Image (cartoon, rainbow, N blue to C red; front, side):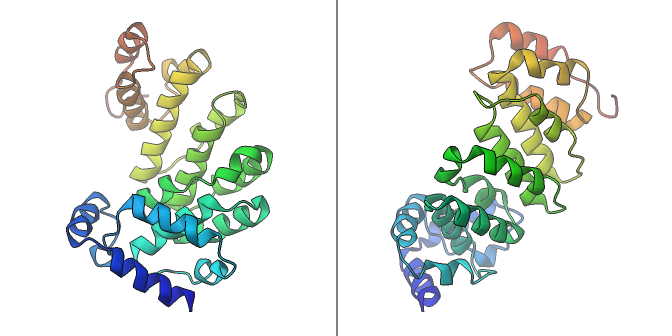
Length: 232
């Protein structure tokens, strides 16, 4: 069976030293779930597996036992060429994503040519009660809808998210910092009007001033807009 074949292959590719290192970077995941396969190796293996007709067996064997299997799953989905299948498989996998790395490194190439369909899924995902489903939705808005497909509705969707989850709030800040770099005039009112929660507001400014895409003048102005915790 392909599931057993893949697991055996991954153990053969594992690096114990890297396992210990990577597990410390992802505190929400159980350290015992790490094999230690490096990301470039997983990506290469995923490209090979994505072409196999029986890969559905692995994709549907959820939940996986290991973090590396989750990573491989995400990279396989990123290689799928059938848009409808990819959307279905991503939706099925998202409830099992339990860490920022698997969430952020899953970026299906086919989505670029199907932004209309993607947006409908984003509207569904962003309303989820699952941390990494919401984070993924915001990430997709950041990746695909801040350039020629930008619409003022999209930052409103991100601003409307209210969560105490660190990994959701951090993605909101990342989104707005990136949006400031790409759509400054349209996004700066979210900062001047203090539309975001104080922590997210300040984190957005922090990330923006670290960006080489923000001008020195803009950075100076943004620094002046920091707020004290608890203030709106």
